[in-house]
Image 1: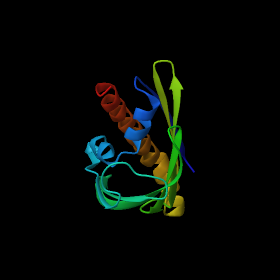
Image 2: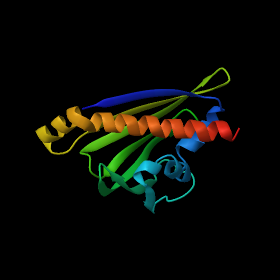
Image 3: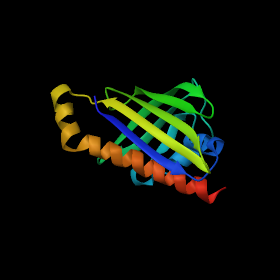
Image 4: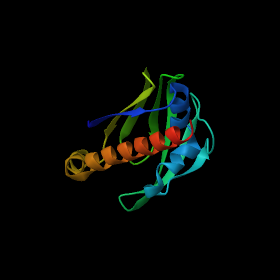
Length: 151
């Protein structure tokens, strides 16, 4: 099961970073390359513990839907979303926020299991893990830009 870790320092208060990371509209802004849009569940504003969102997006040239649920929330330090339905066999995305000097360290830990058994494992090694890492990093950089422009 691949696990992707990423950390980024954001010159903004922890509460700002936390709320931007769980804001559906900001998610759409920071995932422009995949044309994501929220089509069911919470489709705008802040998502809360126990709520779901269904995303429609184009990944690797394929239009698909994925439903995620917020399974844990400890505002403003941590929240976790997990796939309920979608292309992966499973995934869990842990979002953590740590106050640090003049800003916040945002940590992403994304663990997933690909579908299709051995074929999925080969896809991970050939391209999927790299693709998912680039997606997580790009989204974090977009969130950082929005947070730092709006403080």
